[in-house]
Image (tube, rainbow, N blue to C red; front, side, top):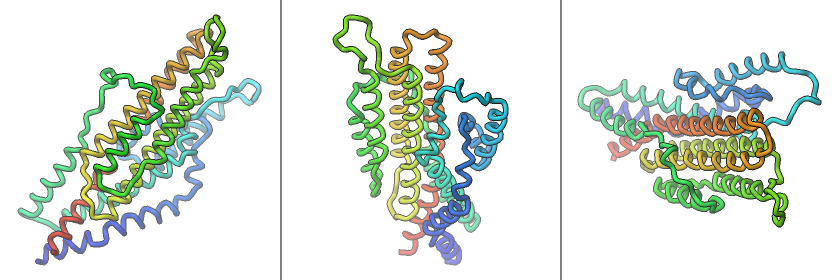
Length: 332
């Protein structure tokens, strides 16, 4: 009974402690941390590698700031020669992606600490059994990345199919969460792509010319990828809070499916934008157009990586949720 009492004591206030602790930490960090995002590329291309080395988001931001300071020092001061450039990091922050990612990291880190604390209170068969149960959760997070080469092109349905898949998956989680912001973002992006694909002169027999320049299409693509990724991470953050404060059993397998759906949508949208970009820049030289196309595919790849990173952050949250339900069941 002493061991059971110890286990119950550790997890009794886990949900409340983790959530409130995360919010307190966010208040401490404050908006100034987010202001560290510089106008240039904030270095999010290296986020995945840094996170794999257990670096915190603040370390990623600090490295980005140092790199931007070097870029700014060597930049030309003449505004007349500068072109409007879409900076993924700034846009990601504008859509509050950084705030939600950081909050999710805090919840994940504190949940992981709670799991370790619980494991130290157990021994023998109880420890072996709990480890086996946690290993089953971990197995669901060993997600096989989807193959973009095998991905089929989808019809331009204005984001309806994406919204349908999201709704079905969230219903399968049996939690009171919606993806309204994410669905609306996708619809808006699809509308943007459709608008940019409209020719300047529909009735002309001459070769079609789009009403937007290649640079404008590129900027819209980067902005769209940043928004879709930020909304995806916001959804994961909200799911994390719900999981920690409810007694619902959330299946990691469904979260894995959700992640695949998000990554596929990112890939599909990047292909639509690059197709539009190719048409818009048909009269431009390859050395001008190719970097723009490459940039869209690069940021799409990064967006998928950030989404998968956010998914992985949910693992300790599901683990501590499982432990909490286990303790509550033992008390009955």
